[in-house]
Image (cartoon, rainbow, N blue to C red):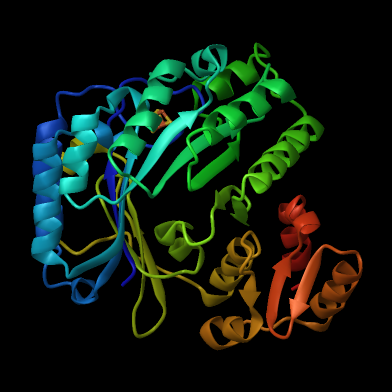
Length: 379
Ligand code: SF4
């Protein structure tokens, strides 16, 4: 076993771009924790609970809306059922919830990595995103992380926002780097259909920047973070060496993980292949579940599609994909058209095949999606 994921489905307000599962009504937090504990306890006896747990990730939603007591109940249940030997225990935090006292409580619970949703320091961009925090709160929260000895943490940035100039992005990066974060995740704004942003774009009220401008933003991010010693180890993730996120890296490698909470996904290799299942994104139904029945939504994964997914995810990382492993684990072999294509792309400086390991170059990273689609379409 590699990881446990816990989904906390509450947020103070809906960010305009977000399509994760969450509710803004807070009254159900306590019953939710009761159900979550029940779900965890009921997984006792499942084969996967025998495997040692290497990482725990508390995400959402906004996990920092939970009290110390609620989190403590969740960790008690996890320790009760699983053999937790976690090297990395991450919790997502929103800056407006963070105080020095709260961070100390988290450390006492065994949380050793924080993921801070900063996104931007510009008030007008935070407002456009409909974030609940202010620039000052983001700065105070980062300061508090340093004061409480969180030496491992990540901060999120979003670039490619409407109205965000290149200089504004540079200022966001400079501001964040003042706190010497060991890890930064930087994402380009994505317009999802069922979000407030998606609707505004549909109605023509907002125009996102064009691909060329977003690509310049991407270059600014990689250049500035690279200069600061943060290596781009995945297209959207940058870390000083040794501070890469273990939990997320394991997703990209198709390691096992079990998710708890509404909308949480699980992925597990059993004797025959890989299986995925997902909890319904429905808190009301979740509160009424007794978690004792057999899950109905098990999907046995077809190895060929899984191999393609592995290629796609692996090529987004500096570790690339081992083609021998692709053959032994998934039975996937490159055909002659793909091999030929690899030679052409190596010649063009987009990728490198080193013995069995295929990796994209810095130049290839810029067009990673295009390259992967092209490679997969040849099979
Ligand atoms: S706080 Fe996070 S999960 Fe909640 S709405 Fe905003 S982006 Fe989505």
